[in-house]
Image (cartoon, helix red, strand yellow):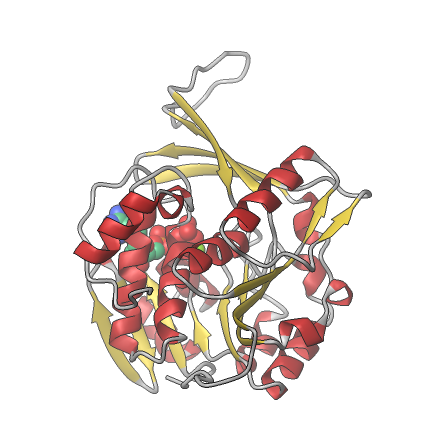
Length: 323
Ligand SMILES: Nc1ncnc2c1ncn2[C@@H]1O[C@H](COP(=O)(O)OP(=O)(O)OP(=O)(O)O)[C@@H](O)[C@H]1O
Ligand SMILES: [Mg+2]
């Protein structure tokens, strides 16, 4: 695994250019619903959503210095989401408030191990590379990109941006998350040569490799990216690093929901990585952080709950201890 810059005068550990929106989660609704009927949820939560923002929030709560560049609409949901990041200590000074768009939103209906998910993109697809300050992003040691197929506004110019950041000494990670069109097309192949750490889940990597098995998908993608970490839900993760396969078991928990577990995994993994730890330790950190996320609703509530967060990280042996 490529070693990140360790001793530097950089002001931030992690920079993210990404989407920012709320998740509205309704619990207890049936899997199949007829039209022309009213259905009553048994629980409702509105919380910080969006993969990029969950990674930023949780990485900051784990002690990294995080800068987040984003674009939201001039509305209450945009303000609430931005406030959540600020409360977590994330630097959002480059955030753009654009009156011409509505802040995006995701509505989630968890049904045990599976869920329905509905999104309105709005501001999510409105952020462009022209909105980003390259010098500010370059003040971090590492750059993370999420939700490649929702952030379609970034597609033009993203290759050039990653090239620039690489030239400025940053290491780069990518979590595509799902492609709603299931096409896995451009700009994935063009950006993979700049990616040091690739963080898909099992279903995503198999589908992006044209429906191959996990082993075959790792073989295929492993020729393009030096380090791949595949997230496997309660089974933890499998890595392929410089041709070597490794398996790292999940942490046994009793989940409330698994929304944002993958993003929380990324935050834990990157936290250990940016402390210069080896792959096995980073994978364990990801599994602990992903499991922590499942203990409360949504992707960030467990990390906001300081008593739960600190006791879980200590008991499960999270490898980075903050002073
Ligand atoms: N039920 C669970 N028990 C223990 N750990 C879990 C569970 N679900 C998820 N995790 C942890 O979280 C990580 C990420 O989960 P998952 O494989 O669901 O990612 P994902 O599908 O990318 O999630 P997301 O919906 O956030 O994109 C797993 O690798 C594991 O470490
Ligand atoms: Mg994911």
